Length: 380
Image (cartoon, rainbow, N blue to C red; front, top):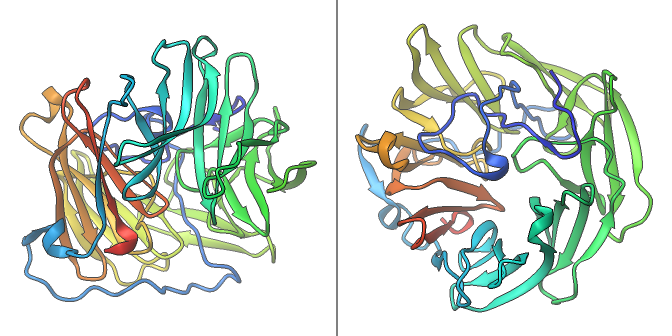
């Protein structure tokens, strides 16, 4: 079933992590398999292959990646309000939201571990503003924003130049977003997103130039969402054992197969496979979209912690419930490094985990004393 409503959000993960999520990362809905292939239709598995390691050995992040860049950012701004990151540009610089000190507005800000702060956008709190679907291209950041008074819009800002944020378009249609990195896709100097015409079994591929201007609309029969450009992935209400991919450049369709009783989600290079039985999840496997190089990466006590699969074609982000997870909502945060075959312990008790732009971040501490921790996986 297709989600409806401007800016509708559906979480594509079928096995939720041990901790609750907020914003577009929440929701128990099952949308189906996420699979993407590289341009041209070839199955090019460029990701690193695992090496042999001692089973069960877990290194710390500092041991596994001593040169990786890290950062710690206070969840409280200097003027008092709580800061919630939505994107990290690097390990020390985050874009996020925070109310103003008088609580009359919600600010979209750039914060740094040195305490500096710059406001990109400000909207009245009474209008319930939502900032979401962030994507980075060069020095520019794009996002969607909406309020109770204004429909969904796409905005952009050059964060390096420090120029004011600008609206690219408000002609977003019945936009659909699924909480992954492909909500907005930038290619060929344009921003792309999907939309669903009412009562129609077609998908609109909408786009606007990064300089703004009129919106172009391409119609694709069926229900699709964006994946790695120029691929679309079929949206299904259940895991039926196959899924389809469509290359928008060539029109070629690819059918990807998996076994009954498995819930499978794929990136352009890797697929995560939730192996189920009548009792629930029994293990998590990883494989290429053609089924090759399959291996077990976790047992039934682990969960996929973020929506995207195999971040940077190398890191699968996992959570692992502890004895008090049901009480305090925290869980162990792990990263399976495909290049080494090792599971790396990131945090013993994290309160949520998020990733975008190649950076992993999570929080610890009490709600009124939160610390955001970041790990730039691009430097690992």
